[in-house]
Image (cartoon, rainbow, N blue to C red; front, side):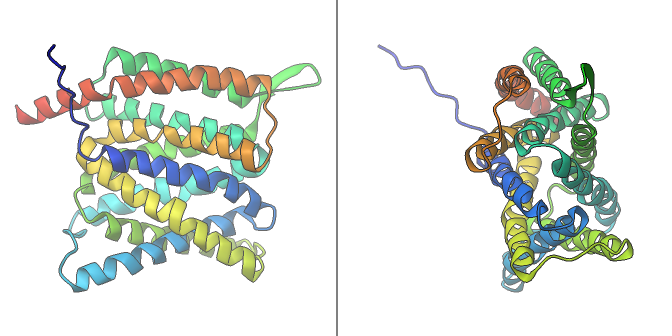
Length: 307
């Protein structure tokens, strides 16, 4: 009996899966901190934590000559543009949305980032697009629309908190596709620069709008969550982006909503509602279809690059 050869997993897939797990676990914790911290201040502190944490890992590597190639030249232009969308706009929209909607709903809505990322990568950068990916993205989109609806006084309307999370997903998707221009640079340096720059911008805006600052304990907790869910997650994502491409890395990041939703129900005791179950019933098979199209799309992208 001849055993069928098992296809080896693509290099970088471990990083692509670690990123959403680290980020997803940070969502319910951020929801808890929002009860004691202004959304803009919390965003800035988490990003500062991410930047300082990654800088603490990057600088010794640079001094010892072990760091990878850093940002230089036009990389900084693409980095700054990506920062506007992913570091500032997306993070603030996410915290504003999370402050008015449940952590489980916001977590599932994060699936839409993979939709936007893959569509932009396909339309703008001509990455290969499989039938499985198309069906999966349609299922994810349908689940996202369902989560944005809310019923009040017999009238179905959009939840503006959910719409803010969708806006964050779009901004992150734009940032992810822009990041391809510096994806080969040292991920620790990129994550450190991103965290410190974005955190400074958002804390500056918080000061400008006279946002109240939290107590010392909440502030330190925000920094700690930022190191893990913003810093390490972003570093892993940039490694995956370099090795797998924007569409594949973005699709794998769709695991973050599942991790966040499960953690929110377990830790925060979020109610398991009918819309939440219906959306999960659409989004989980959609995620599975997207991941099924992973191998074929990756091989097609590499074939195109070799031509």
